[in-house]
Image 1 (cartoon, chains in turn yellow, green, cyan, orange):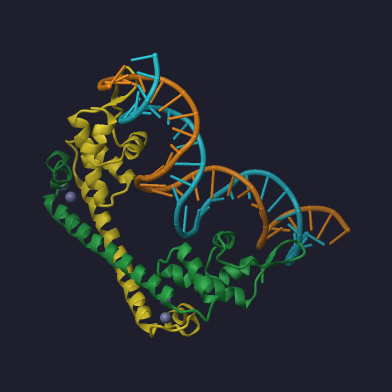
Image 2 (cartoon, chains in turn red, cyan, green, brown):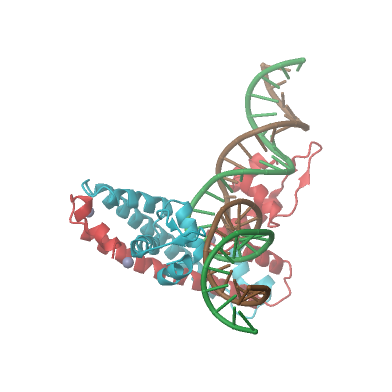
Length: 129
Length: 129
DNA sequence: CTTGACTCTATAGTTACTATAGGATTTATA
DNA sequence: TATAAATCCTATAGTAACTATAGAGTCAAG
Ligand SMILES: [Zn+2]
Ligand SMILES: [Zn+2]
Ligand SMILES: [Zn+2]
Ligand SMILES: [Zn+2]
């Protein structure tokens, strides 16, 4: 299939597919006589792997590492484990930040008093301090 | 004070200060004879306002809007309210995403089985499906 | 044989910074 | 006073993960 169909089947935009290829996350596909990219179901699986990793917010660099690891099936999976643990730690850290952020935003929202002038608004006051 | 001291007092890097100035978040400071930026305590307050907003993850564009609003103290604060509410919605959305993400990562981490080969690792298997 | 849909590469834009490069200016020291 | 070190200046490029053009080539249908 050509890139248009590949894009629809994968749910990935054409630009993103070409971008992943440039970044080495997808193997260089065969080309037609007219230089069009040609994909098969194996390529689709590769892209779906990448998409799944991205949905977990794993960076392209880490995905590249995971792909390299996948190609060494005999080795120990401890690096894979470490990578996922690290990703989990990142998520936990972000969640903690977001909780603090939410608390302050909520406090601010309630500090407005509603229908004030900007001068008297509790939100602006709290941002100013 | 010159930008070095201003940077230390504000906790903002010199490059960031100049960047904020370029982006219109800080008023253009007076310059010394030798063209060095000169700041006073008013400028420090402005920068602290920006920093406070940034700590709430408000975008530079929205901060610019807030600054404009601050300069119209007589107007209604409803836009300020709306902006904060929108920010809160954004944070809630991200938190929801992160929760789902965390759940899947945890499940994956427990799927490894530990000390496997990559071929047999539950993590890789689950990423592949 | 021309139109329109599709594809190609290369390049620039996005956000919020950070990091140089190459110079000018000021301050401290010898 | 000469010079070295610290500080400052502008302009430009890099970061992550895309997205969006511009300008050209390819291909199927009418
Ligand atoms: Zn999944
Ligand atoms: Zn208000
Ligand atoms: Zn605060
Ligand atoms: Zn494992």
